[in-house]
Image (cartoon, rainbow, N blue to C red; front, side, top):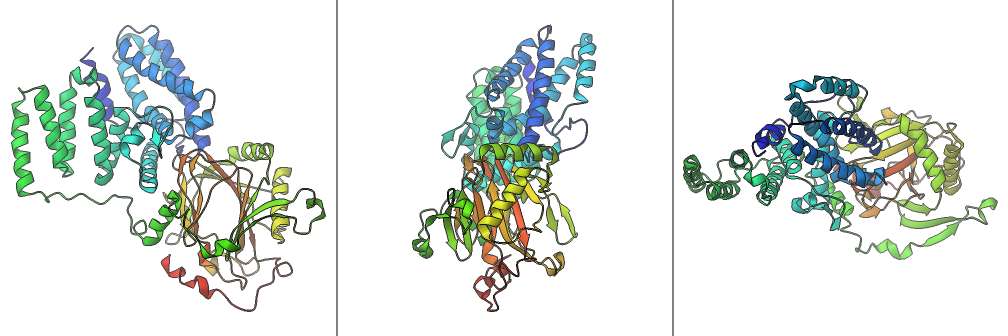
Length: 542
């Protein structure tokens, strides 16, 4: 049994980048709906694997142990699948199991040449199932790194299932931690690789069963080389001492130790830590760091001078049928004007919107100025659907709500945009108005307002952060967030810069409605006095 470590566990870690995917390529990690497809895939695989295990004579203990762990995960998810998948740790582990672990299970079964019938049936089963790709594995790994960076999470706590001080479900295995470290290492993101490899060694050293298996110390030597290459000499030295303590007969380890001590004394700075790959010039700007601070809630207790003029009110906008059911409005900013209106949509209406939109969801894209095309981007990880207002009466009611609240004419509003944010889903700081006049016609004009319906609560993270206003708006299911993107003169208001903070725990759904300047000449004519100078200082920052 001890010899199985080399046969089963270590190979699947070393070969974690092996592709195992079927059917049409699709990135699942960017939406909860996509993750649900993966969960259904694993349900069927587990059922088929369980049938095989019941008659298997070899490797039964190891395979059954792995299946028991997966059964436990499925049991936790059985009552609330969306809630289970809203935990980024659970989502990552699901993707990792399907991408790396299940191919290893299949290789193990292939050792039993008498069971070619099972493998044939397994291949047939997989043809109609959804599997993650390299995009999902890399994307889910970087999503965890994004959550670490934004919310300053400790790797040891994340691996234990603790997010922002709250324990959510099960934690990570050493295989999970190693797989993350291996991917980050391949990307030369050493600053983030090191803590994940350290956590791997910590979990392994605490496991009395695994530490006695054949190949264990060989694997530890492999980690030593990782640490040495990254210039993490202290960790490499500690691990060499651990190996010698377990097996003093390994003379080559003593030699490595002497070499490493010499290197630490003579060339401590020879291999500097490389900057994280995700740290592009934009991510290092003061403005982006401020956006991350807003997402963390660092400014929640700061007093803004205008706050004393803000208040909550019941609002009818002079509509007679709103006298008995006025809108509940909270003013968040007067200049620029931002409000949040509560209890606009019912749970039943939200359920209808989601069910209609789900089949139409596709990966969200951003516009690339250089290629003049819409492309996938790590600055925006979500899925989007565009809906016509005649698709269902609920969409028409949502449009009417926005028109009643704003007093604007929404006859020619853009199609409604439905967005679902998955594992670490986010959208970096951006403007909703078009920054180039060539992107819109003079007849239609620019986007004058944004109306954002929150279709879900979010347990942790996922707020809407206004970069220059130091304002964080937390999602409230059924509420509407409304703001102006343009000054009264029609000029762009650069203070409206905002972004979707990464979803730490939960599932975030929103619906956006934009209306252009067209048709507003009676409801909101342009002010002849320009006042856009107050926001021009922010234009140069983007």
